[in-house]
Length: 69
Image 1 (spheres, rainbow, N blue to C red):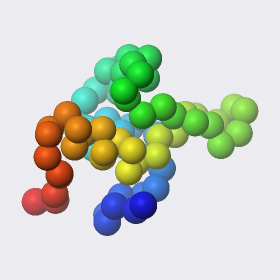
Image 2: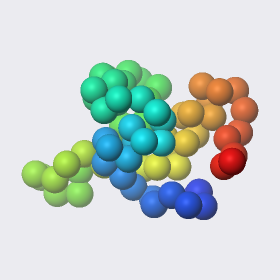
Image 3: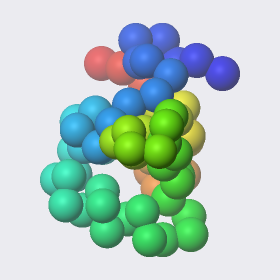
């Protein structure tokens, strides 16, 4: 599933931009069960999130679908 205007994956900076939360908060949210979990493309790469999962999490928090302005 691809949301228009977003790449499929992104780092903490992109997740921060999408959610409006500081990167430090994104790192804390990683420890929660209901927040999308990142993955690494290789052993030493930076964590990446599947952006549609982040958008779905935001929609769950908002209680409604999100749409671009």
